Every structure is written in C-alpha cells, then in structure tokens.
Length: 141
Image 1: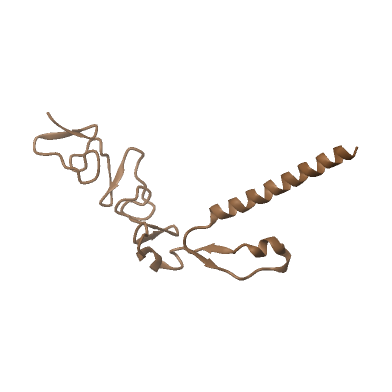
Image 2: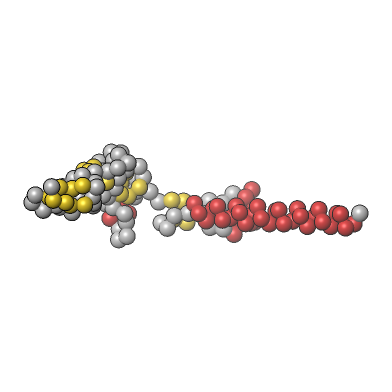
C-alpha cells in the first residue's frame, strides 16, 4: 500500500513539473526581440510568476520609429508589423495587397517570375533581345 502511494505521488510530481516547464517554454516563444519591461504585478500571481519578467510587444502602430531601426524588415507599418512594400508578398505595393500563390513582389508589383521578361526567375532578371521567359529561364524562340 505504501509503495502504491509513493508511485502515485511521484507520478503527480513529474506531471506537475512537466506542465510548469511547458508553460514557461510557451511564454518564451511569445516574447519578441523588442520588448519593454512592465512592473504591474498583482499579488495574486504568486511567487513563481513574480520571478519571471513580464514583457509586452512593441508594435509599429504605437512606435512608428522602430521600422526605421537597423535590422527592421522594412520601413512601412502594416497591421502592426514592419514590412517592405516593395518586396513583401502579403503587402505588395500597399498594405493588404496580396500576390497570388505563383507570383512574387518586385518593385511593389505582383509578377509571375515564370513568364515575365523583366523578372524572369526572380526580381530584375531581364531576358535579352529576342529571348522569352519560359518557366523562369530565358530562352530563344
């Protein structure tokens, strides 16, 4: 009987430890690189939560200058994210304009790199005179 209680207690302890570590791993994934510390802790959160840093995400909607920072994906702010509207497929040319699945965004326009002579196989890859773009490769007719 004592052995059975010992096994049950140890299994419950392992399950509790795993759930706490999984919760802390999920919290680490939600935190972005740009964070601001917040000190609004309530007494009901407990000692364990007080030991972790509370962070919140910094968005370009509230702080538009972060899009101009070095390492930013782009200078424009679309849906609270910094993007480059000249190359982003989800915001090509303007916020919210999506390219089709077979298109890429080149200079703010959605183009099909498989058949476009000015962007054959990729942005700004021009085919020469008398050449055609066929499946992303410049070929003579």
